[in-house]
Length: 446
Figure 1: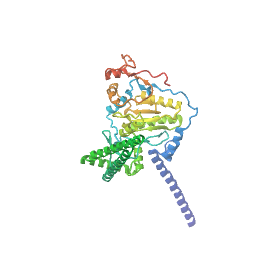
Figure 2: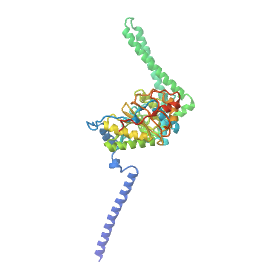
Figure 3: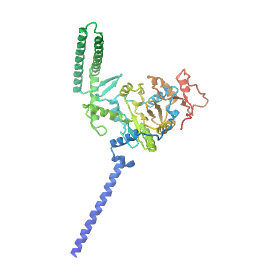
Figure 4: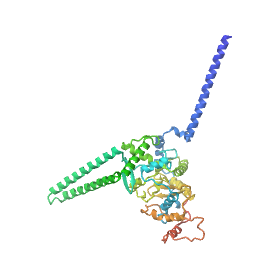
């Protein structure tokens, strides 16, 4: 009887251990599954198990893949993606949205960082199943961070770095002055007949004098910025604020003394959009990916004005009006250079639909980008407000875009109005608003 009791007890213990193991497996496994789902874990095809780097590497192969003869159909640009007859109306529409909503636009990377900290902007992943960033931040440099005020970039430093910068400028001035003196000495030593050498030396002297002037201007700006106790302390505070952000920004620490870290931080800051802009991007990308099994290539997101001015030197499409659309965080660009005709036509019709719904402004640029601007609440600004913003949109010449189209009539305002000729010159902003009404959608629209 004692032996049977012993066997029974052992059996019960074994069953209890098995039951405990099964309970733990289902309980903790279920918790893990729920946690992953809450943080975007078990999404389509378990993408959480793959890093952004893996997704980007796989995605870029699809983006750049040779299409061959598949989808080689004529490209048909809908009227919604062409310029208005008044080429400034496109930019004025975006300026009007900024004015109506009181939207803050980023002046520099520090301003951009502050917008991110306030929650105005959200992070955009480097790669997902539906889209990838292709060229975002490509022109970001590894220079020290700066404040952009009155069209000038002012370096921000702590006290030790400021002393180092003054020392660097002093050494540069001394070296340049020495170089100029040496070149002038060589020039004086030449004989009158040695004109070719004289011309070459004079070119070198002129170039070094320009370098000297540039360095002197840098020192003068530094003196003005750090010479006053109040502005000096403000710039020191800016540096301290940026340093705190860099210590833990989107899961990574950056050393502001390290040039490669500075560049990486700038790229990370540029990988941002306002939530409404990201929502539009994801919607477009999802449709494109579902149709063609390729991630949508996004070439530009938010761009501070300082960065925009730098880009304008190499890209005329980077407008330099007072409120560049990209500096608001509402605009992004889609790269179409690798797409087939079928892909472009599909994407353009999706963009045209969103524009017809009043959710975006959009244009097909000749530099292989679709520029998309999201309206805050899915409603275009009024014609009157757009007309009142025309002057601000004329600060820089319009970049060459696709062929023009006229603005569509508003259902509420179209009754009783006669169409105006495309070349008409309006005498007032109100007349101009009436003269640019959009014609019916192009017959080439699919």
